[in-house]
Length: 206
Image 1 (tube, rainbow, N blue to C red):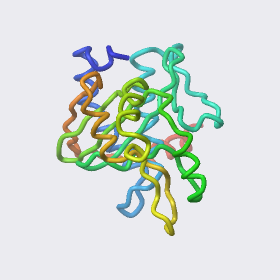
Image 2: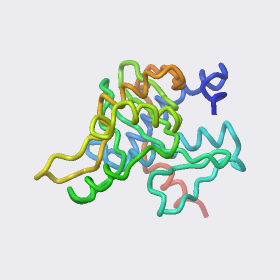
Image 3: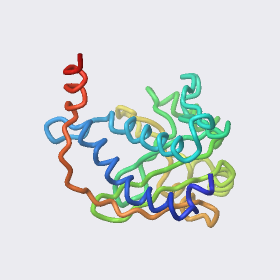
């Protein structure tokens, strides 16, 4: 995985292409100017496609059982969780989606990092990063901070949208010396893109 973040040619390609592809994902998942929740799945596919491009489809497994909700892809049989966040602040990374306070508490009590994480910080018209944070780095930070400082529970009495990594935890993870990262300028390139065009073209084929 290290070569993805150290090979000058692939790093340059990521810096040039990722903003454009993520912007296309936003356009495809937008309705009346508002970006829909499905944009997260599209971004995940874009990053998985990058891994397939770099390491080959024989070495990247994407058909992950639904019983493994934290795993998004296997690269050389190494499980990876893919996360994306938008904004200049490092916050809002979901560890798990929950339906009630009890399951959130249970998750915190039993949680410990198990998989490597690929994290894209999208900061439009500004700078962000693509990070790779190994399981070992996560475990070190988790043990150092403790579960209460590492895990943020949804507020009681609200409609819970999931258990999150704390901003403090995320900052510590991204600042570790051994965390791999690529700086990215998130510029929205003006493109003529219509999410329906490819479907229309398929209907037009005989």
